[in-house]
Length: 340
Length: 197
Image (cartoon, rainbow over all chains, first blue to last red; front, side):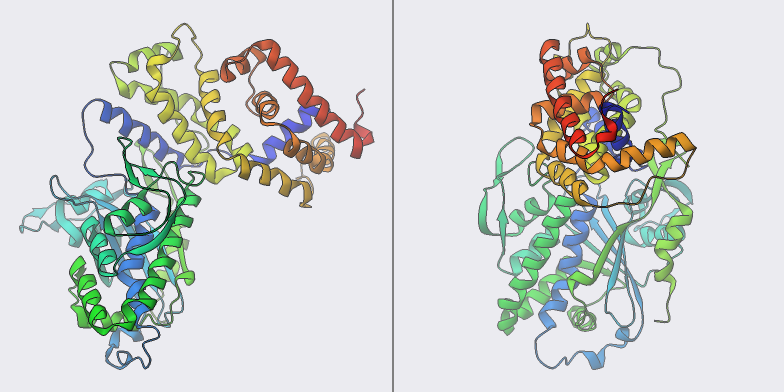
């Protein structure tokens, strides 16, 4: 064998066949092409894991961290929820006023009864599913149809999305938590900002600087830019972005521990901000949220596993995804374990 | 199982026609994705691994789309252009690419897969030479590496490599020769069985 042939062999061994998710990159291209035509797509490009991490951190892990280390856990006693496993649907919406809200991030989180760890499974918003019949917020009945999973949210809000997710995943959802851009910013602001290190200046789509490089404390707006930035930071890969979001979560946790925790007045304000920034279904007030957070005392952010539902291109449309049923069943298996 | 991206049913147009059409009809550009994304993915995943490859392929088409007005429509085949863009994007990951080759240099791996006898024999040779190859790749300067891998892993002809990198064909030849010499000497050092016949 000559050297080129040996090299070709090595290449075949190192490389990979294109995965089904490559279809998403086609979608990115089409988005760009359509934007050229003057269809401005509403909202920004929330990337799945970006918001997953941010929403999870803000809505669940941060209260958990704050309560952790507050001495005796007074809330444990009054939290019946702590006794059983829970499935939570996190919905990050891109509502920013103007245009219909779209659910940009859909994540199912499973907390086992002992709360020692958590599984977070992202559901791509461009998944084609059977949306069951449900009622719109105005009480109109929407018949069942087949369509994109985030369409269920657009037409019927969180309750319809919950039904669609339950049908597609066969996982019963106990609680849904909805948060938008404003909520995320509110939580970061209630913390008094979060310190981050920005490796390179982050630019907006028009090329104007959003965040300068360097170590700094970012407010809500800056934090949003930091967790959303896709291009020009690190090596630009998805893994890099995930790393950045984990960094952010850790920074949020440290910030909460050293600042808000030490000050009861700020703590109360912070919990109110969390309660006011997220909508929960069924509704939880600050007290219940605190109780729920109390049940998470043992959970450390490192024990949260993030995965995405296994998908493949939809047979009827290569720009859409459908669940890879067999593999999805395996991923969701722990979610159906209600006993422990 | 879906093994390949779905190809458009009947698109007789050449790449240049598609690009020209996309000036008025931007969505037409997606047909180029259907034609070449799988090919580009294989090339990039060999260099950077599957995680980064997906993103780099997506970026490649976004960059190409934004530069489509500058495409020379006399060139019917857009492959060299796309591989050139992808190669530039790969360069941004040079640290992880080099680390990947360095890791191969050390890691003892499973032996070759089962298969017909000659494939196994070939596999044994390839497997045995892997650390030396990886060592050579890790040590090549980027300009030589790009030429070598566009030929070996991108399956481009010399003229196509020249177009992809915007350099004369003569330069492609000299860079390729230099790179192959280094690879051969690395192989020769550790694997005397593989001397040139």
